Length: 422
Ligand SMILES: Cc1ncc(COP(=O)(O)O)c(C=O)c1O
Image (tube, rainbow, N blue to C red; front, side, top):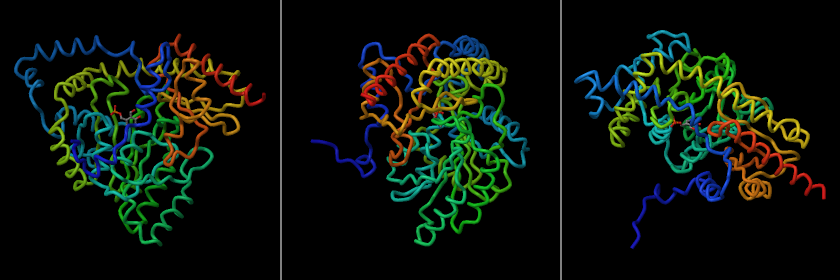
């Protein structure tokens, strides 16, 4: 006899990427440019060894790190992170009070809590095209519709188009079903794009004019992973046009420090929404692992976090350039297009003449035959519309493997062009 699942249970389906990766990993000698993993070699194991020793030597206080902690997270960590956001956004405590900041099991948990507490099945969440594909999976899991925002050629949101879309929902009496707008605002996964402060500010004004509250979820997971300079745009938390909107700002200590510690953090400007998320978090885990939080807290307070992050910036820049240059002119001459990002972990490619790159395409099979694996870009579009895009991640492979993976990718691309000509 099989368990009788809930509607939510029955809606769940294996994520496309997990399916594809399981398949790819079964292939011997596969080089994966797919997973958004961080660099293996540089993981800060020596930092963590020292920190654990310091914690162990700190007596009773140290011992409590192995005890359950508060649902919202460790006070000192929350205070350090609130200070960090204030300094990025040049705002003071009156703008950003740490009582509205909580720690989660990665920022992924915060995204899940946000949708769980805002949306019912059949509701809508506005998303960029492309967007973070695991967020699309959360929406699908809750039976919530991802509503694609019209985009401009330069990758920014088309505000006039968005306004028309919202008016259409209003005239159909469905505006109350549009619950949130999700933005991956810094060095986006997958496109590397950053949302300018002007566009962000205009989004705030547009949403503030609506008759129904539409929350903003600003996902700043890659904000600190710039290569040379931070992207010059404050978050929505600092913008006047966001003052009267419910805003959730999420970020993470995984990508810029140690993904295995899985500590994320969020600031929510709306106390009612925040309390609801915390109540659900209380039911899910009543607190993120206290020990993992204590480690990142020590790393932040001692300056180790920033020292490590600084070294990662140069490292990811060199990895990005290695992939970019190894794909190089040979791929460009075949008609492929991409831009060099200024931060993050991904290159976002467009195939020539709209050639299909999705998981069922001949190009995808050709890459697998050549021993290289990527994320089909269609997974990053609500409705899978654009089948000519590819996300390549340079986070986890070493430089030599990146070069080899690029050679294999170019060989697959060349063979497809040859067969297209033949
Ligand atoms: C855009 C974006 N948001 C959120 C996350 C979740 O990261 P974590 O749960 O490690 O904080 C990721 C992870 O890849 C991401 O790419």
